[in-house]
Length: 352
Image (cartoon, rainbow, N blue to C red; front, side, top):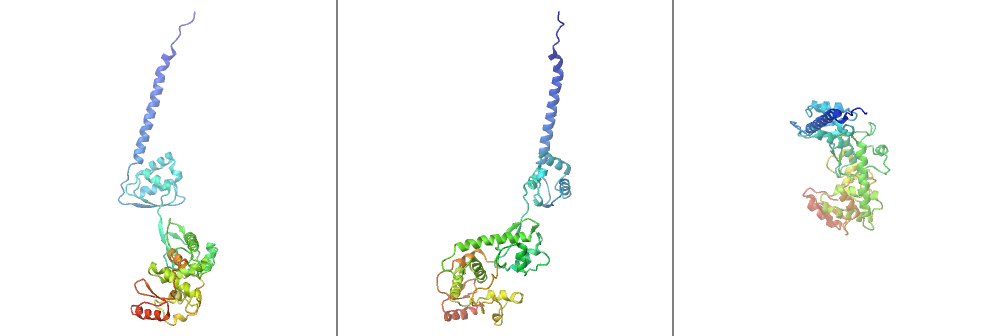
């Protein structure tokens, strides 16, 4: 006869209940820790003032957390590091400058650092500036890195082109004047290459929109003429008519006789006034002596000036004089021009 059977389910049930209860307790504990951790991570900060933090390349995450505690951004760098590892956000942190708002949370910090929302600094290349002026300003910048080399002066354009490896005939004028947003530590050469690419795009666009039968034969000459228009025009509405004057004079083989080219030829010797002796200076940029265009641009032209050079108004104007209010008085004959000069010179204007 068989021995009495024991109900194994009855003997195992207390153990099973204990195991299930233990797992449930652990799960509840983990959930509590998770939500508690999440609550800590999302808790807004309470900085007295916004903080600009420079997260340097090569910094360890522990060092970043310690820095943030020292600046009063974090209370617990250990919790911050632990949370970053748990969420894998520590591996996607990007170097750069960051603006930290007063109420930023630990999770907000990690999101900011991992998405690379760094501070951008404006770098302005002014319309009508010379390349020498641009280089001087860029190389003095506190947030750009001057990588052009100590052997390069701000007037050594030939060496500059070699350093930048730009396949162009001249450097002056070939950088588009605009405001470029860059991160701290951007190289001066990178800004210049960026500005050159922008100018190439703008110049190509203006050349494609040019009128028929212009006095300039290629984009380089268009750029040179645009730079003169940039320096001669105070009012945007006059640019295309000023362009008409220059195109007409070029087609008639007349000297341009424009003061800005003389000022460029004088360079640092220019003291704010053009005298009669300055008009005789021996320079290929002196359009009072030399026919045709100068050999290079004399400044950084805006897109408006590029378009004006490409699209002169129709007419037979050959002269203009500044009225003194940013606009110009245009004339067809020398007698008309001389009368306008006498009229407006009394107001301090200069003829062209």
